[in-house]
Every structure is written in structure tokens, then in C-alpha cells.
Image 1: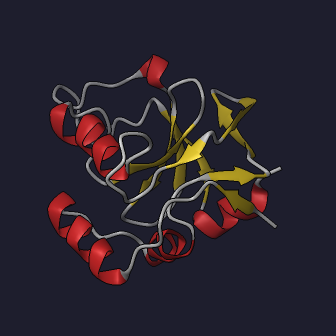
Image 2: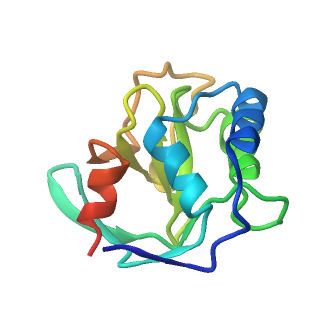
Length: 151
């Protein structure tokens, strides 16, 4: 079971719909429910596995992003930085958490799958199309599977 600490103030469906409208994005139901229940914070356990170029790798979640007006770990700020100011990930992919090294844990809004975004192998999506996912590594089919896999 995953426990959350240091979460932000609870939010409601109205706030989520406002953010979705502002970001021009529809959150998968699992992520919407997650935000309603936890809204950011640290989790324990927090280690996850992924495969990079045929090699098993590990990372860990430092913070889940939250819907709040604060300066740190703000979902809207991360979205603006990685999706609006600079097109640093495919259109359907958006950040939901980060590790301590500047990498992101992302969700694909098309199918709810979870991916590890490696900042050291970044793709410029102003020059590449959305099919280039060379710095995204599959982690889990959905948020529930991801949470269940944490160790």
C-alpha cells in the first residue's frame, strides 16, 4: 500500500475541470481520482523500475505534482515549462511527478500509461514529431499498476 505525506490542500472536480480547460487536456480518470485523493506530495514506497535500451533501471519519485498556487511542484507550472514554453515532450504526454535528478514521471493522456522521461536524452519536438519517444521509457500500463509496482 502506498502512503502519501506532505500533500497539498484538497481540490475538487471544478478545480480539475478548470485546469484541464486551461491546459487543453483531459486527465485520465485514474489521474483525476488521484488528484482528488492526494493532490501531490511524497509517497512511500517510491522506487520504480523501467527498461532503458534493454537494461533494467530504477528511479524513485521525489514529489508528485500538485494543483496549487505554490512555487514548488506545481502541476500547471511544470506543464507550462515542458509543454508550452518549450515543446519538450509529445502532445499527449504530461508530467505527474519528478525524481530528484530532474527526470519526470509522465502520463500519456491517450491511454493513461506511465513513462519515465529522461532529461539527458531530450528530444526537441519543434523539430521531431510526436512519434519520437526516444527519451520516454514505459513504466506501467496505468496509474494503478504503477502505484502497485512501487517498492
